[in-house]
Each structure stands twice: as C-alpha cells, then as structure tokens.
Image 1 (cartoon, rainbow, N blue to C red):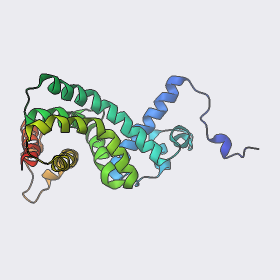
Image 2: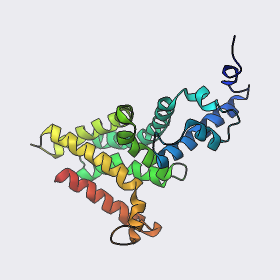
Image 3: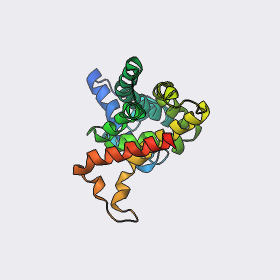
Image 4: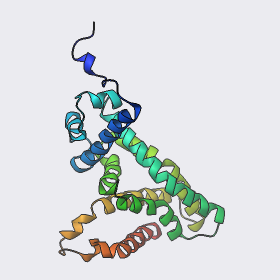
Length: 224
C-alpha cells in the first residue's frame, strides 16, 4: 500500500502546457543556482522552492535525481549551441577556403552569443564551464557529449591548416581552447576587480573589442 509520502511524488493533474512550464522553470532555476553555487552546491529542495513549485517532490517527478537534471539542462543548451555552431562549421567545410579564425568564430562565436542571450547569459556559460571540473567523471562525460560533434568537426577543419602538427597535439589545443572559451567568458566580470583595477573592456560599449581580443587569444593558443 502506498504511504502518504510516496502518494505525493506526482504532481496533481494539470494541463500539458502547465506541466511543461513547471519543468522549464525547474531547469531555469537549477541552471542559475548550479552555475553560481556549484553543481553539487544547492539542495534539490532549494531549487524546487526557487521555481515556485508547490509540491516538494516536483523535481524528483520530472528528473529523478541531480545527474538527470544536470544532463537535461546540458542537452537543452547543447541543442541551442549546435543549432548555431554546426551549420557554420559545415559551411566552412563545404566552402573549402577558410582560415583558423573562421573556424574559431564558427565554433566559439555561439558561446559568446550564449553569453549575450538574455534568456541564457552568464549562468548558461558558467554552467557548461563547470561540467568539466565541478561534477566529477559524470560531468566530464556530459561535457564530452555536449561538445563531441562540434569539436570533432573543428578538428577535421583544422588539420589541413596545420600540416605537420601531430593530431594529438592539435586535439589538446582544441580542448584547451574550449575550456578557455567558456571559463574566460563566464568569469570575465573578474576584470572589474583585477590586480590592474577595473577594465573598461567589460563595459557594454567595449563588447566588440573584447570579442576580438578573446578570439585573438584563442587563435594564439592554437598557433603556439
């Protein structure tokens, strides 16, 4: 016989749109809190409270556990990212005449756009950045799934531009670039309080220049 606690696991019957909205709210609040507090930081109950759900078991009903929640957020962001990066990377391959900078813009330009998206912003970029170092092997597996298609396509495009460079060395540089792209953007607010004092580069009117410097930095990492 079900106990009182297990009988409350499912939400009360609601319209499908309301059910989706609650799931979406849970994911949005979780992304923000996991990005700022660490993927193992906030309790699942605190995420439920932040979402405004009336049932304390709402998150368990929709996602079962933390790992499933983290993967669901990552898959949603992956779909957003790949819908922008993959067509650009494939277009370069079809064109055949491209530069290292073109490949970087195609692969990491969408990360900058993610940062600038009002619905995603710093929380989304920081969440992806944390996957590789803040959630153990599970987070690394999720991050690998997130970037597998785009980084492999990036490798294919870069190999002809670096003749004579060992492929393993190129893979290492691509991974380092990927980490620098996310972490550099996620924590760029540090430039307000850097050892050199506040930098104007993080002001809104300097966005284009900051993007240019960021891409130059990534390109330098590949060419070094």
